[in-house]
Image: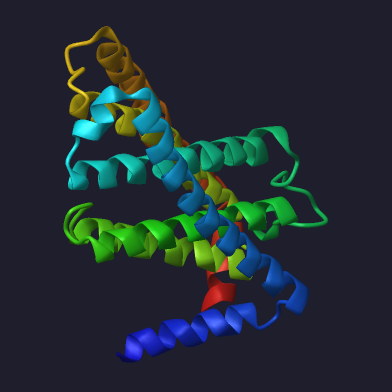
Amino acid sequence: MMWVVGLGAGLMNIAGHATPTKELHWLSSVFIGILMCKIVYDVTGVISSSLFKGYSKLNDKEKLEWNNRGFSTFHAIVAAAGSLYLLLLSDLFIDTKDELFINRSSTLSDTLLGISIGYFLSDLAMILYNFPALGGMEYVVHHGLSMYSILLALLSGQAQIYIFMVLFTESTTPFVNLRWHLDVAGLKNSKIYIYNGVALFFGWLVARIILFVILLYHMFVHFDQVSACLLVDVY
């Protein structure tokens, strides 16, 4: 239990420099993420029952996962679009002499990170409550580590560029979820299933393989900033 106390103390120390306004913004962003998941979960059920005749034939476990993947897809779109904007279209992470990119954050970046924490909290709660219907311990570990890394970047305001690079990998999630939906709907032999599989392959190649090569190369080139960031977090 000592390592849990140590992690908690470390997080409190990192967050100790934040103003009450910023802390309220963080909490409200997490709440928005949780509320988003609840709304999309319910809307997915309503829309699916109205537009998809096979939805009523699904058993309770399949309906649960069907709706769960609905807000998983919605979060993936929000996270990937937000990450793409911050990484390529905005000037947030441009390295300047005035402020290193490793220390840069903004209201929008903090909001997106808070929403992602809200999503992972919601999904983890559903996984634990329905365990193991929505996934085993590997999902619990994945969500726990994801929340911890995002929380560190949010509270410290550091290394957010790399968190958003990883969050962009969520761009493959809609294809993964659609593959599951089509399979459950009995459309595994349809053309859309094949097209989705091709899109998933190329999406995975770009977002899960090439992007990580770029990420590691970027960290290597800017090792001085990365190491400085690590030292600040440790001490």
